Length: 288
Image 1 (spheres, one colour):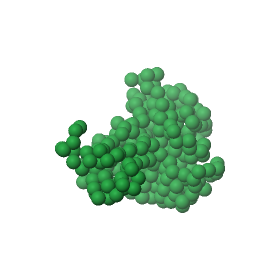
Image 2 (tube, rainbow, N blue to C red):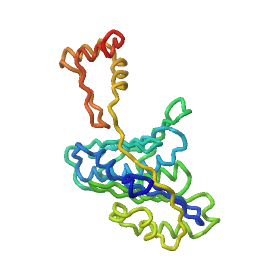
Image 3 (cartoon, rainbow, N blue to C red):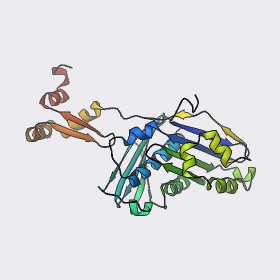
Image 4 (tube, rainbow, N blue to C red):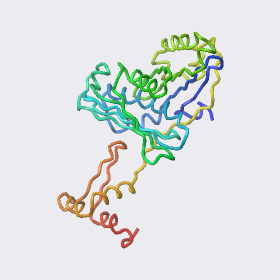
């Protein structure tokens, strides 16, 4: 599998003699599908695209089958950003914002708030959740702060998003980095700061790394494909309705004629009439 055959991918790499690991992600079709039909303002689209890239970068390190969900909750005109990614790098996500959002610095767009991680992996009786305050002037800075707190190792991110492409570069200092090369981390991060957004969104991995770090010995691993995955889930809808109760569901049906349920994260609507509701509560007595 190569980047020529996979247009949406995450590709890990390792600085052989520096004790520094990294990964590069570039999302094309999956990013366009994620925002299709949403009509987000450009400022919101940029935040969501950068968050899509960094979520894939972090989820790519999941060691067990499971799902990782990040939420940025704020009090600004962009009140919620949600990105969900599993170990197979299937992504979905959405943003909630005011009808009009003017370009502004990230702290003004998000306002006071928090970053919430929910991790649901095999072996956990209940999903793990952590919360940290929104600390940083960019999406990259917010997630650098999160990574350094959660993994106790310095990390650097470069993120960019257009209407067509979302991309990101991740670097992390490993515990033995200073022993291998005392100046390695400073040297690599200094070079990474010269990276331009246009390079992130257009260059393939090898060319990007060669241009940024021409003197370093880097081992690049095979790319992992990323895809947008948000199928309709009637079983989940039926479970929710059973939890609501038949009496309440029938009251909604009498008032509105049908029951409408909006799946905001997948931008899908579920509509149930009386016959469909009967199948929810009496599946064995009705035709399939």
